[in-house]
Amino acid sequence: MARPEKEAKVEAIRERFLAHEVVFLADFTGLTAQDINELRFKLRDMGAELRVLKNTLTLLAIKDTEYEPMGELLVGPVAAAFVAGDPMAVAKEMVAFSRANPGFALKGGFMEGKLLRGPDMRSIATLPPREVLLAKVAGSFKAPLYNLCGVLSGPYRKLVYALRAVADARSEAA
Image (cartoon, rainbow, N blue to C red; front, side):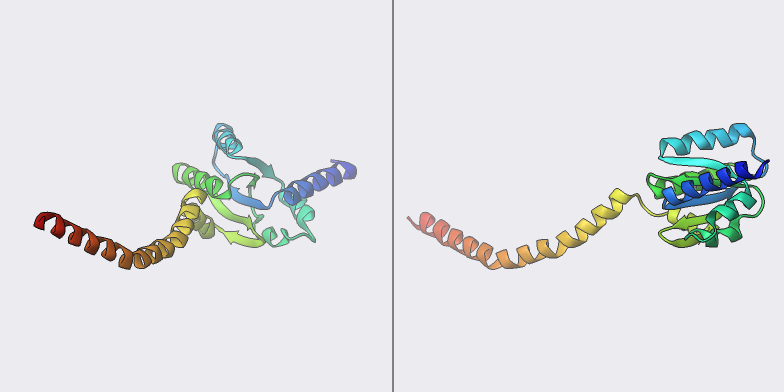
């Protein structure tokens, strides 16, 4: 391949990395093209793009960027999932796919400025969905307020019960 073509490919890879904050890497040794396309279509529906990378061109593309630590993961056949949607859902799908296809191994990735290893991706995949986490946070804010409301309304409630008991006693006496 001529040098200008390689430079254009390196620049395209660099732009793809810089356009996405989350990138997951996997080894796809032993998978058929049909298997890879199946995963590619599933990830596309989740807002991710699966690409097979050339390691030498990718190393040149990520040089002098925040993605440079990923260079150590670029060994052997590498497929990259560039995530634009929910990274948790994509990680879950990739972990599930790796369980079903032993030839697909998670290498790691890059998320929020940090290099991830394969086990880190598996731990991300076990996190509950974003909506559940938000609901837990909202519940933790609500619980103390609910308890405070119960404590503050207790004396008033007791007063109402006492007045009702007095009113019932007077109505029975009459």
